[in-house]
Image 1 (cartoon, rainbow, N blue to C red):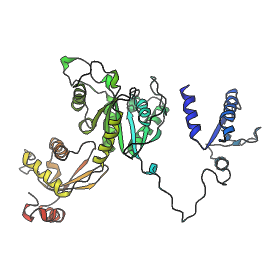
Image 2: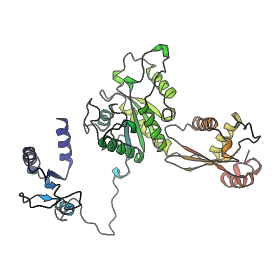
Image 3: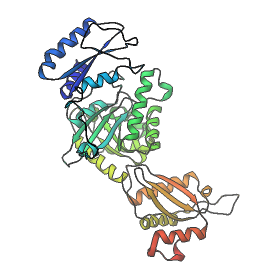
Image 4: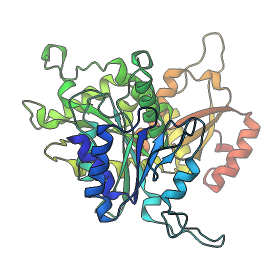
Amino acid sequence: KEIKFQIDVALREACAAVMVVDGNVGVTQDDIQVARYLKKTYISKGLRVVLCVAKCDRLETMDVKAAIPISAYHRRGTWELVDALINRGCNGLFPMKSKDHRQITEPRDNAIKVAICGKPNAGKSSLFNALVGEDRTIVSEIEGSTTDSVDAYLEAYNGNVYRFIDTAGIKKRSSIKSTTHWLSVNRSMKAIKRADVALVVLDASEIMTGNRKLGNSFWCPDVQMRYIARAIEERGTAAVIVLTKWDAVPNKDASSQERFIQAIRSNLGGVGQWAEVVACSAKTGQRISKVIEAIDKTLAAHRKRIPTHVLNEVIRDALLWKLPPARAYNSKQGRVYYATQTAIEPPQLVLFCNNPKLFGPNYKIYLENKIRQDLGWFGTPFQVEYRKRTEKRAVSQAEQWLGPRLLPSEAWR
């Protein structure tokens, strides 16, 4: 019933449709029922339907005159199919344009791409339907009901146009057992890579165990959730953590959301450390508007550009609080001459220093956290690159970047 509903939604929005039958099997009773349904419901109302016979590798003569035989494997008959769809180029679906014709830019062309990702059966499709305001995807308790990415547009009250992408549940590679699951996960990863913001969906009813002996912040994310968080951070996509099924959480109080946020910050590395956390309920519509606000805030941080002199003041303040530890076998200590931002989406920072090997992983984490705290730079991953420079060359470049804000003698201090 839900599949038929989705087919009707697609047919009502379509300009044309292609009915595909199997050339090896022939016309079955199900094909006849589908043809009668299309003729009665949509063809009578003006929808253009083209009958296509697939798997015609030998291009045998068909009994149906209106059918178009094709072989997708051998790439035969596809041109005839497209020609029939556009009605032989006469005011069809894709009208011809002259070379000097300027294409009109529509609001959907510059839409904000938002990918909804997470584990299987985490509430992604329910959140997708609640955001777009209609049932565009199938919602089922059966794991793996969504196998392909589905797009839908939303024009919000603030004037922004969002393109939400509902993806299939992501599993770890070792847990993928069939080709269909592998294709679904691969398409989900591609959707995350091309998205501006990723909504990481977590089931709120599965986070807290309720065992107060282990503490209010006890939560152990499984391997799949850690894999998703690491994949989003590696691809440089901004992220918002959405706690769905908030209505199913028992015994909620004023501090429940803070306890959930504390559990995520304490146990989920990567995305859980810098992404904004929003709790909502797709079933009741509670706090759905907060998700839109979090997307706008995260996207602004993803496209944020920090002036060079402000960034160097933050770096200098971080060095004053804590210097890089010196190596035991070497008396040299890490020194940062100056820093600059080289790119956005995701933000990329370059720190010019005397030797990148003198900065350990713990100090790099401290420096990244200090930059986030001082600049309020949350919601997006940023890449920090350490480049080796001599002191003389670094001072000359620092004077060029910083300008009159710092004296030449203070450029590297």
